[in-house]
Image 1 (cartoon, rainbow, N blue to C red):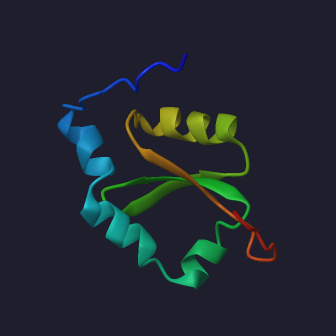
Image 2 (image 1 turned 180 degrees about the vertical axis):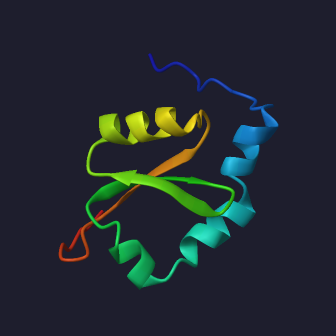
Image 3 (image 1 turned 120 degrees about the vertical axis):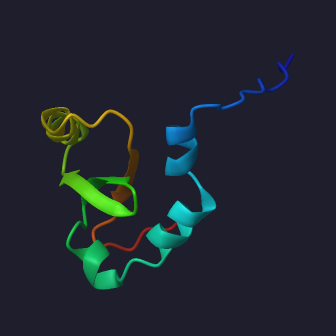
Length: 86
């Protein structure tokens, strides 16, 4: 038998800002050239800026730790030369 979904209420203002509609609009409006620079990499964004990028998550975490950043939004940018169908 399937369990009902768990409702989680996020109250951390800093985390809520990372996933806000404004942040999403900013991310979706990034020029293709900017995203292309990070193709095939994970990027960390905060306050409408790309603050770190790396081909591996472990390296990205190391970069963030070195900068003292604890809360970010992490996305993977597909390589521009690939066609990905979801």
